[in-house]
Image (tube, rainbow, N blue to C red; front, side, top):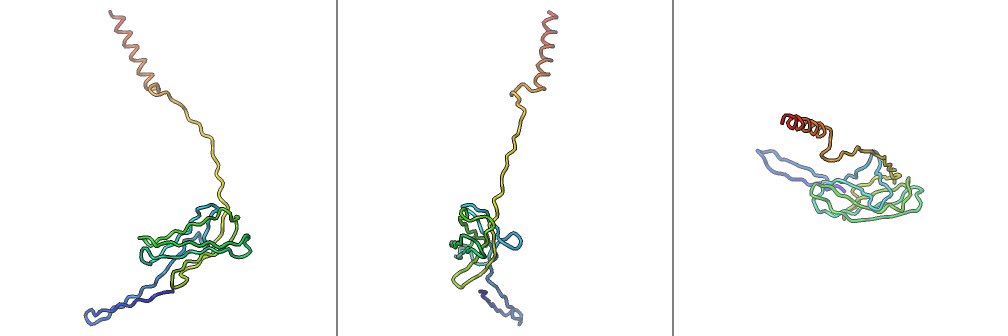
Amino acid sequence: MATLIVLGMLVGGASVVTAQDDSVSIVSDGEQVTVTPNDDAAIKGTSNLSADENLSVRVRASGDTEPAFLKTTEVSVGEEGNFTATFDFSDIPANSTFTVTVADDSGTLAEADGVVEKQAETTSEASTTDSVVPGFGPVTAVGALVALAAGALLVGRR
């Protein structure tokens, strides 16, 4: 629901009118919200609502998603107009679809479709490193040889 605030003031005989719409946007990857099947999946949004405004975020299974689910949480708008709702999707299979709804006391402010994406597989590569004993690098070895040669020359002259 949009609220229209009209402010009028007389400035040199002209009336100034400013309109402000309350709006909420849900952050998405292209056309839909994406989450991974873990226990702290975040759904983020932005708003021009005042800081600390309370919002209800609901995630409901859509289409043929099995098992059907409904998850809700309350969040507050931050100082910069951002909010984050965290849900447990660890028991929801990949490719499940859902609808996200953000609302306040006045009703629905935003809605978006979403999907649970397969969690990216991580691979670890073996790495090798050359070990160098501290103090015995190539520069130190050349310096030591020069010092030995100089010492030998001094001993030989005596």
